Image (cartoon, rainbow, N blue to C red):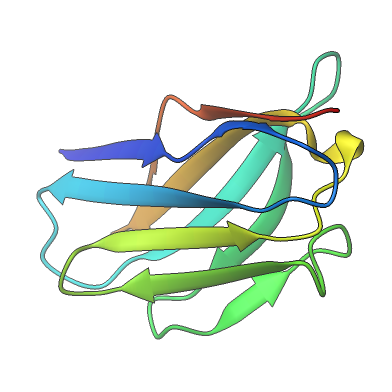
Amino acid sequence: QVHVEESGGGLVEPGGSLRLSCAASGSIWSRYAAGWYRQAPGKERELVAGITNGGKPMYTDSAKGRFTISRDNPRNTVDLQMNSLKPEDTAVYYCKVQLAGMDYWGQGTQVTVSS
């Protein structure tokens, strides 16, 4: 079993920055792919950024140029650096870890962008 936990959310003003961290623990015997998703009130959960088990990042249009996803393999963490935040980035952010054909989700962390 794999446990996933997100941290780093909070309240930030428009134009500010936050760094989210996703820590995976448990039965991890190889590198895993991971993704950051978000879900705003009344909307479906959507992919923001992902990273392969080899470290190749990918971004959706909403994240390009503002967000950076990275991984620290020894620590089994995947971070999402978010800059130039906008009110429309307000959502609960979730981390998904993909390992051996299984998906593991965290409980999410709230990000609120407001003045």
